[in-house]
Length: 306
Length: 172
Image (cartoon, rainbow over all chains, first blue to last red; front, side, top):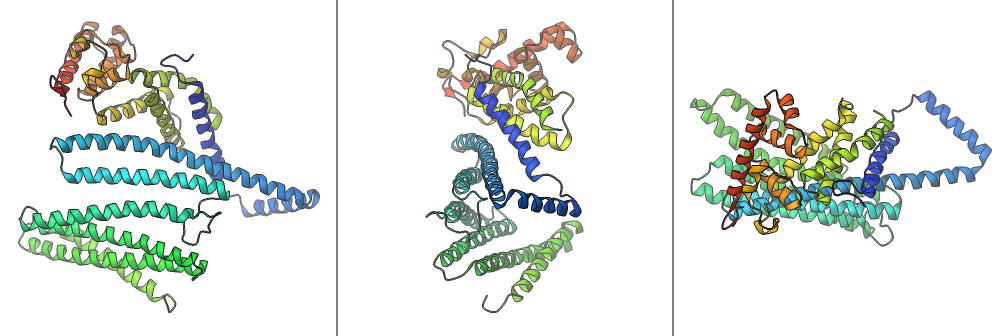
């Protein structure tokens, strides 16, 4: 029998296996690319071997390779699940602590919301990883995370994952909306500055467009499954959807940054802040404007109908 | 760094590392396994980038210790009813032996509130099993000095515990 402070045999073997598989992955995916001439020599050798062994040998080799790939993908995802479970345990402890502090009046509602959000994110990540494993087992391939992913059997793995991600974003949006509401009251009561209110507004807009981006992907997915658009069109529409949401998000951010810049300029002219602070904001504004220009041009380049 | 050398290090250190972690958490097998596993996962990432340290076991113990401290800092204290019958913080004044997960949680929670030098001293004596003479040599102080500091550190530990455990129940 194992002593109180001795590790269980199964645990020691499991951890050793995890360490070994970590190296197997490294060997499989982390090896440097060979020079072209050796690659071609390798291909030539493979052709010769194929001729000698016959096509059946090649097929068998492919099957072994596929089975190995499936095994490696499952191992990698299982390792990620192990780490995520540990992260979840830590965040759950943090959540308990924050709840106690909140009940004792030591922290505000915001600290509670932030931790609740992190908890929801990790829980969702864990569920998505478990869906990944089921997809790898069913397809034997890396999970496909785009709206043009095929159904496997009757299951729509992509939409299952998307639904979990959407729930997380919806919570973030709800929290950002509540914070914006609180900030508005506080600003009206002159408890916070206009800049702090604008920051809350910027965070809300960002969450809003992130939500719209995912909701757009769901719509595209539905049209793909109904046969209204093909795979190529799906990929283009996803790109457009992302560009447009990013563009709208940036446009609203720019308005806020501009307002902040004007206010900061006023403070600078009155000698209340340094020039460096003003310049920092100017750089941020320029960066946002450049990205808006870039996205506008990208959208202009799209073929008609998009 | 190759697989063989890592597996060799693993085989040589796993029992020592697990024992170190398990003693720190009063034999809580679930926690000890999680922390040991996380320590090794971090070792793999770090050693790949920076190479294997000269004293792998010291590196592993340091990481495990920090993981445990972070864990105990966050976790909620247990209630006095969950501790062995008749146990009270004053018992720490004459030394302590952590033999249950609940006691481990309570003592470790209080350790996170002490000065780092006091924690090192108590850990060396009570968790690592070092003798007073060995600690004196390691810390560069006299044996009497070690004894005095150990006594004062245990009193500080007891006071922190008394603050955590008020007569009307567990303080959040």
